[in-house]
Image (cartoon, rainbow, N blue to C red; front, side, top):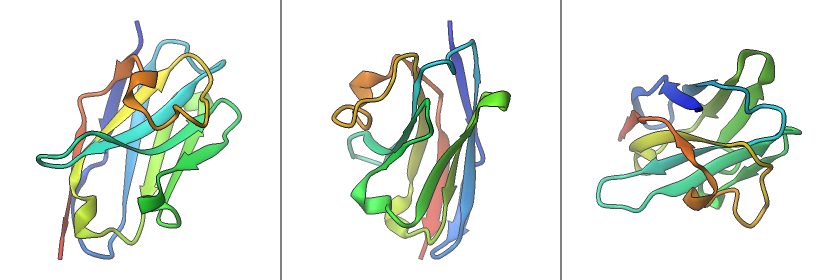
Length: 126
């Protein structure tokens, strides 16, 4: 069983930055796909960024140039650096993990990931 837990959410003003962290237990880092999703109030869950075993990132268009996904395999930790935050970035952010490699077509689709964290809230005020 793989356990996933996020941390690092909070409240910031527009233009500010936050860094989310995601720790995992269980040995999934040999070949894997890891991702961040978010879900705003009354909205569907959307993929934000994903990274595969080799560190290749994939981003949603809405966050390109502002968010950076990275991973530290030695620490079993995934990160999401969020800069130039906007009020529309306000959402619950979820970390997700899969023990198979990413595919471009499905890396930002929730169905790809069997393991999920409980989420961490990010609130951006104008």
